[in-house]
Length: 253
Image (cartoon, rainbow, N blue to C red; front, top):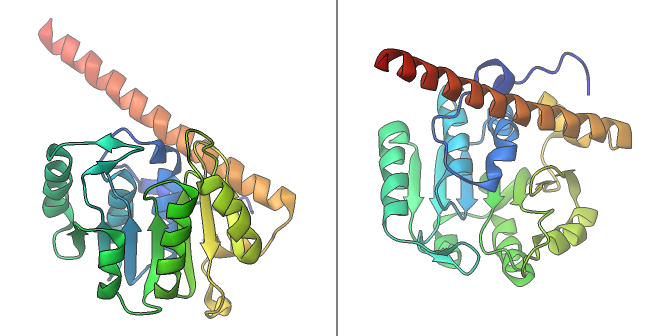
């Protein structure tokens, strides 16, 4: 990675949708990835309260990307998130309608039921973040991999999470050896996999940094950059909350 790498997340990204999620560690990268590859079709499997999905959508809108986004989820919860009530879908749907109407669509269904709505080799960016057992993530990958374009990107969340019966880490350790891949190890981890094929001569800078130099030093620099980017965003949010609190107290006095 070079010193001149200055992605849009550092220059102007301020999340419009903040909810509790372990995806918070990867917001800067998620925003930059979308801004970089400019997907015509983006699909997320497992949306919950929408932190990752709306980061992607915000990147699409702010960078004037002509594409469509689909969030696929029952919005009912599972054994890992626990069941939740209708308020989760209501909040996600309201935010989607307010900010991303016209290019973002919520598909309230099982992942398998959504497969028929997407053509083979049509998806530029696929985010897999559903049920986190080994069998579940393996099935999601096998089912949806044919839907991804040659050269397309697949993200796996929680590749470092070794708790309960989570098995994404084990599946990721297997699949990353068979494909071009990059692993972010901070937070609960994020795996970035690139499907074979596509025209690599037109790769944007971010993809070149992720995949062209596999040296440990280059990868360590990229990981460190996005750890710092995450901390910068967190500190910025804390500062704004502090200033807002001080303004409130000042107005009361």
